[in-house]
Structure formats: structure tokens, C-alpha cells
Image (cartoon, rainbow, N blue to C red; front, side, top):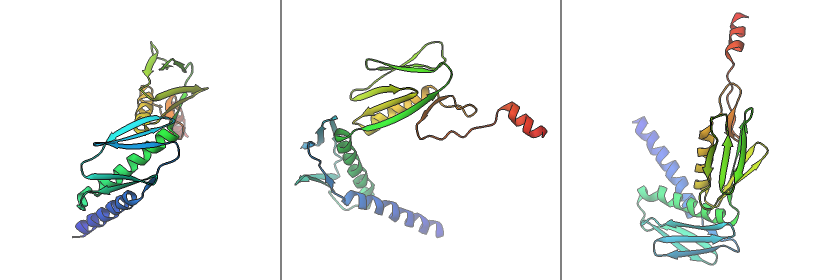
Length: 200
């Protein structure tokens, strides 16, 4: 009984938060164009253009530089979709107006990263360099030992950053590899250090 009550409480807390997010209107900044074309929402701004298919249970209205996201019915199971779509549309507007960015730090003797046209070329101690091609709308930049991935599509920027990190994940002893700028690597003691500690 307690388990059911706990699950019910969690359900109402999570879905209630989604509902509050969904009810918030989205302000359209100056210089941003938003249009509804059949079942697509199209957003255009200085950083590019994005489009997304509208879920059949979602209704989107544009009035006086504000976007309202509403459910077509009041079924509780649709509440997560409501909050999710409101967040997705807000990210689209943020993306085409200001853009999104991920920063990666690479550490290791002889490690290098350079941008060649639309490709990021990584020298990570392998027998050959690793090349990653930028998707449409994504840009690479390298500053010292920092790789900067930027673009209008938040999910795409995040996915490419994850792909780059996966080419040489940071190891836990010396921290060599590629990590997110704000990522904390939990270091492990080396074998010699661990042996010395045991002997003491």
C-alpha cells in the first residue's frame, strides 16, 4: 500500500511539474520568425533554421509574439508530452537566436586537435588521426586544448560532443583523454601508490 502511495505521489509531482512547464507561454524575441506549416513548426533566426513535427495531441498557437502550447485533450497520460514539447520549442527559439555550445578539454602528451574545413581532426595517440565531420549547422573551433562545438540544435550539439568524447574517454589514473569542461574525473591511485599505501 505504501509503495502504491509513493508511486502515486511521484506521479503527481513529476506530471504536475510537466503541467506547470507546459502552461508557460514562450516569448518570441525580436528577429525570430516562427511559423506553423501543417504539422510542422518552423523557427528561423540569425543562428539558422530549425523545424520539428508537431505531436498530434499538441496544439500550438502564436499570438502577439507569444507561443502557447496546449493539449488537445486533458488526459493525464499526455501531460509529459505537453511539458516536453514546450521545452523543445523553447530550445528551438534559443538555438536560432543565441545558439548552444559544448566545450571539451583534451589532455595527453602529443594530443592535438585541428579544424580542417568542416572536419575536426584529432591526434590522440592512435596509429592514425580521427576525423569527425560537422553536421549541417554545427561548427567546430579549437582554442589551445579546448574543443568548442556550437550550433542551433541543442540535441545535435550534445550528441556530437558525446561522440567526440567517446573517441578517447578520460582514464581515471592520469586523466588523459577527452572530457567535458565541467566534468570531474574521479581519480584512482596508481598501482605503485596503492602498494606503497598498503605497505605503510
